[in-house]
Length: 171
Image (cartoon, rainbow, N blue to C red; front, side, top):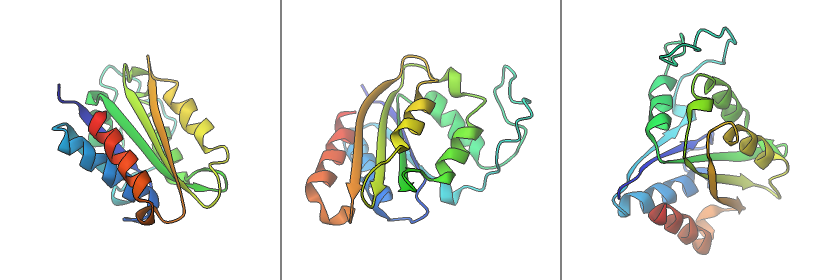
């Protein structure tokens, strides 16, 4: 059965290490005849959450008319969600955190999703996984399938690229 896959890349460097792993995941998912889409948050103009609570309606829509409405809709439809971030100061990058804040209308309406986490780091993930897992835990019946971390140049690590591709293929 074909799955709907959404990949959220928060890398500020298109083609950077975490973004490269995202592309491998998507390639695997597409090769397995899944419907897969990747969003790079750097390509989407969006604002910070204003904490106005206007999104807490049956429509679950933010009043801000920016590029995130489509992404949030795709997350609701998805079977598989991948979050990817470079590690900054042993935590997720600010772009991913700002995105998570804007997921407020839907975060506890995400149900029965499989999750994958992709990180790229200079030395370790630090506390980044805690913040990402905390966000995922707000959904109903989440399943963390795998975490992939690249340290150094992703393109020079063919075994890791293969592992991520296969995860996308088998998701």
